[in-house]
Image 1: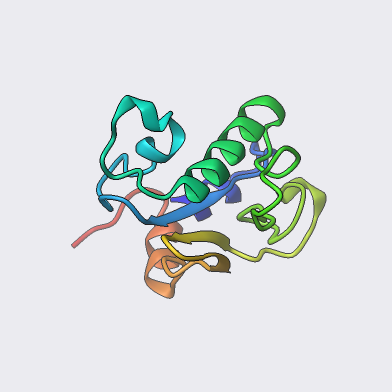
Image 2: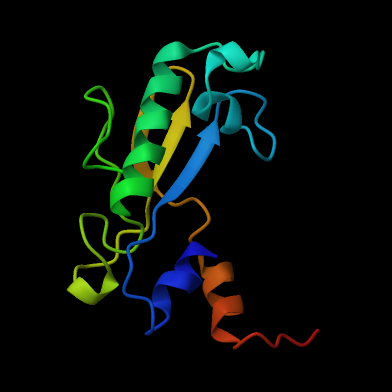
Length: 130
């Protein structure tokens, strides 16, 4: 989905993709790490991760980029299409980079969802016949 969104000519904004494998690992699993621990979410048991994730979200809300105001312990989060700063309009090479977040590490990796099968469905212009 991120690949299709960044491929559209009208999109000049950077897209950032996250794989979050901490907490409950269910939809919305980032929520306990983005809110105060005083709210009482039992899954937000890693204060360092909560600080890092909150800083990414605040930076994105303020600057449309998760990096400028990120926590000093947080790695640079490259945009999905460029693999670096900027947007597809910048003409940078496509990197399909995602931020992989676990309890013990935060790393940048290639998107495991970027595959030939996804490219096939994307090329069918929203109509795929069985």
